[in-house]
Length: 389
Image 1 (cartoon, rainbow, N blue to C red):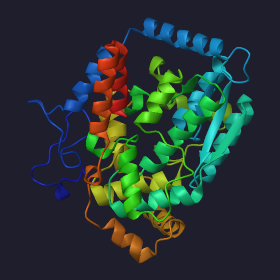
Image 2 (cartoon, one colour; image 1 turned 90 degrees about the vertical axis):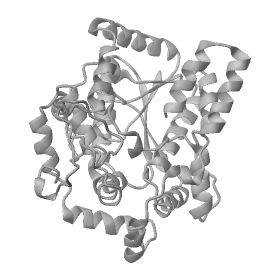
Image 3 (cartoon, helix red, strand yellow; image 1 turned 30 degrees about the horizontal axis):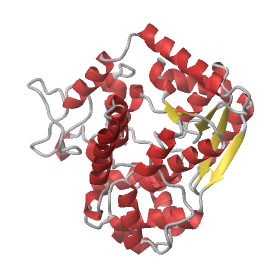
């Protein structure tokens, strides 16, 4: 663990206000007081936020707009529910404010029993309709195998891309304008860029799959640049309601447990076996990345926990070696890898996503054309949103 100086290299530097460091993130920078750029990024973002009253009014305006859009319809919005903390609280918030969402759960074969139980409890106690979208297993398995074989860092891309593709597809089909998003700055604003990759780069996805996959690329919803622009033109909007609330993680957990019987699953994104193994094992051991450093630092920056609490929680990792071993064997078998083959794959040289080709230049060209045609500010706003995803 990083707190044990015996195992730290001589050039090791840790942020004086968080647990982020220069070993897992070589792009980090520090000022003369040892404060990292991420602290200042968080502060800059928060300082630009409207005051609490304005944000409260914005929240109410969104609620009223969503309700108005659903008049005469069975549902006024869509809510993707994983059984995890953020989406579970979002469901409770929707109920508090009189929204009637269609709750959509995406089953791509990796749910834990805890997540399934949480989903059942939430939808039953809040009296929401649940639609389970089952993604073609052979196709998603082929994509996930391809990403392991490609040795790229963001193994969550296949699931995240298809999930968002599906949810927008459902919204269009059911003529629902608003999709509730569990994104929030209070717990997840800070994340080093090199720890993730664009979830919407369809060219990168197809190139990786064509090189390592076995099946043809079909029977799966997509969310590339063209699809994003199309759904934007249809007036479908993703609304991050939690951005307009006072989101305190410990209070949210307490309320969910008391009112719903929600069960904690032990770590961010650990409600899913695939992501639990990816974040708890693959990232730290293959790529030298531990996203808990960013998650916990974000809570320190938002003044929800102390720096000492973050250090203690980081060093008390509840993803045990026996769980890692069990998940290793389960995932290898489910993705049709032998144990030796899977171990060799995890020991391969790491390859950047860009090696397989990216659609970034195509995105830039598309927006240049849109600017010429429209000469409007909305295009610039749309560009900034889509290029960040």
